[in-house]
Amino acid sequence: MQAKKQVLITEKKSKFYGYLISAKSEDEVKAFLQELKKEHKKATHICWACALVSPFCEKAVDDGEPSGTAGRPILSVIQKRKEKDVAIFIVRYFGGVKLGAGGLVRIYTKVASALFDEEK
Image (cartoon, rainbow, N blue to C red):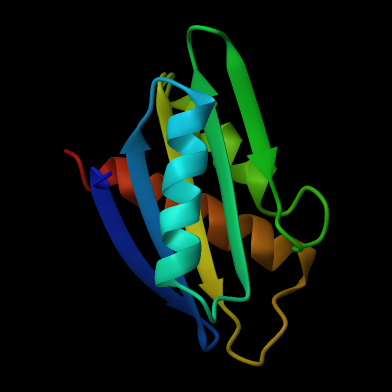
């Protein structure tokens, strides 16, 4: 499966790779996640969120980041943009500098937003 859009944002030495895909099912979302896990074997976290129409499904996964600091902000961007049948994955390579809860929320929101901003 090919990502519709990709971005790379660096924040305090951590690298955040964002991927936006179209998805019609949880199986498609999980398949893309498996591809990312193979491609980014040394990544610290692969956080993601999806919003699917039928059957209705909204999920947010922090993948080891503090609860609510990654998946939820990604899902919030999807919801605010009223996007459906999409998933966003953000792969983080830790750069040695802790960002704190507020910093994590800001960077995950920034990367997710950049994926949609790139479309226009």
